[in-house]
Length: 98
Image: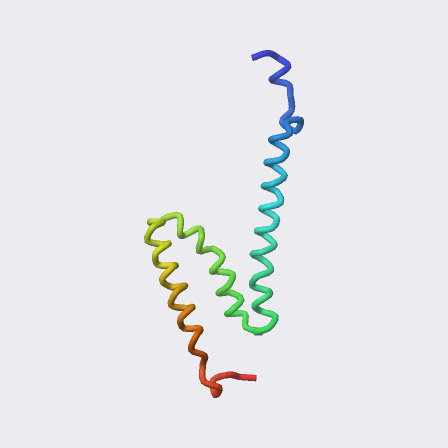
């Protein structure tokens, strides 16, 4: 390894700067999202409990990495299907609050 290669800064490497910039933008977006989602739930509902549930749900992807991905995918698809089918049957009008 010659001395000029060792002295070259990573910031002069276009690929590194592109990768680093993308990571910064991605992390910033994820942090804004994790702050905004509970606030978007809190504004219309006024329920701190609901906002807390949304905030806690944001940590679920961290837990998913510890378990069998195939089983997680299967369970999540079944749950999504059940919720989709349940949305076809609206609640009776008496349960709505204005």
